[in-house]
Structure formats: structure tokens, C-alpha cells
Amino acid sequence: MFIRGAMFTMCVVVLKLNTMGQSWWYIINISVFLLCITGPVSAPVRVTVKGFVGDSAVLSCPIPESEIQDKIEKFSVHFRDDENKIVCDIIGGNRTCKDQAAEYKDRVEMFPEDQKKGNFTFKLNALQKSDARKYQCHITGPSQSHTITELLVEKSRGNHRESSQIVWLISLAAILLLI
Image 1 (cartoon, rainbow, N blue to C red):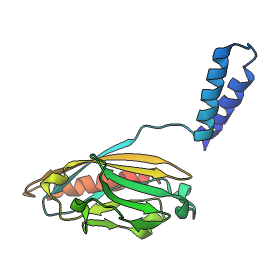
Image 2: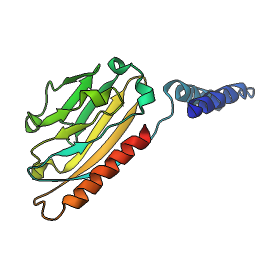
Image 3: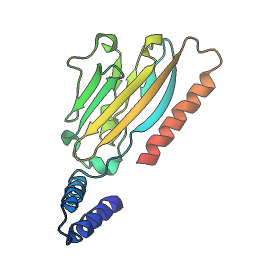
């Protein structure tokens, strides 16, 4: 909220400074006005998740719970892989995997109860080595978010169970910090 207030104040100040009548001021005013309308542009959140062939991996795409406030039907969430193939979507709080890429069919699990809290997480089951890639999550609506998750898939679990649990705990901590 503070950022939006500061953005509005900056917009008013810049618009009032337009007393010089030069054409470049119009360009600055238009740019600042557009920024005021659309809000600040932020860099995507980048996360790395490790999984093992045959297991599952949880890929998070959170926004603060305060941004949801019973407006889940106004949000659209789009999960894509790095080839822009559809993993799954959530439109108006409903999961839709229409036009889902064949390699993700019957392997994507969602958590509808968590979505009400701003956690648009999905789980990719039956991991394959070919699942190792980057996945993008775009949230649009009253609030916007962009998360890029790099999924690393190893062949054998071996003694990696403890490190996998640590990665899971770190991901959970990151989600809780956003709330």
C-alpha cells in the first residue's frame, strides 16, 4: 500500500512540474501517468525446486493473502513451461486444463483450499527427466505476480531425502513470508 501511495504522490508532483511547456515534458508525463495507472512493474520471483524421477515436485505461485480478500473469481493464473506449453490454468478460481500439453495430462494436481489464501501452487506428479526446465506462473487480476521456477530433476533419490525436505521447507517459508 505504501508503494502505491508513493507512486501516486510522485505522479502528482511530476504532473504539477509541467510548467516549462517543452515537448519532452509531455513524454515524461505520459510515461508517469501510465505507470500510475498500471502500477509498478516488478521483476519476476525466481525459485529453484529439486525433484527426483518418479516423485512429485511442488511449484509455488503465491500472492499475499490480503490481495485475495474474497476476490478469487477476479484472478487468472497461467502455468506455462519454457516452451510456452500449457501446464494448467486457474480462471475465476476454477481449474481448467483445456488445451493442456500432452506431457502434463493427468499429472497436475492443484490445491483449491490454498488458492483462497493466495497460494496458487501446483504439484507435478510422476516426474520425468524431461520435466527439468523452467516453469512460469503469471497471476493477473486486481494484483499481479510473475514467478519463474526452475525444476531440477535427478534420476535417483539416494540419500537426498533430507535435502529435498529442506528445499520444501525453504519454499514453504518463502510462501509464508509473502503472506
